[in-house]
Image: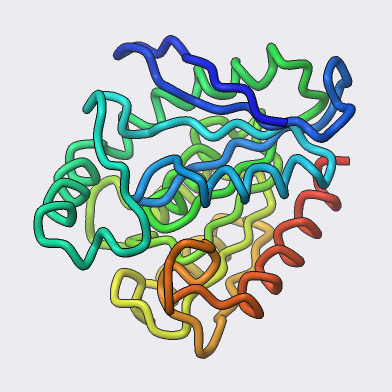
Length: 245
């Protein structure tokens, strides 16, 4: 069951959607903060939000690009269009990790106001993967589980690279990596693994051999893999069941 809302952040009003399981209105349930991929909230993310909710969670999917007003709509073919690709890349560059980290306080408060019990889970896809890990470090006493799937630049040379925050993370972390992904090459995977291990983080980094960047999201055309996506759902729901119940 989906409900569209607006969230007041330090920088304005962020559009968002809340998902609850059928019959879950008014019930106290664990909460999940879902960080979108670079194509923004759309039917595909609604499908994924509904599936998470059906597993017994209150799910919040905020529009991380709200500062740009109206944009898109985008889908899995948008990166193949020069104009839409340029628009997407501009929004990614200009929506910094720091902005999303700041926004996440309001996002978590929104989930809490919905009646969420206990600590939160976070999951991010593509550009959202790093933001889920950054949130786990910034709000370590609130987020108990964080997952990234085909997340890009999780351990880059950038000053705001999520791996630099590993020592602050108290959550269990799961990172699902595409077999070949230029946005998260093997050297970054090794760097992230070392940072998480050194930081004392309970974590798994798992390679999905044969999968490409974006394999989990149902509107990503030939990149999408039903088999790989179902494997991702199994891992994600196990993580949340073990940490949030």
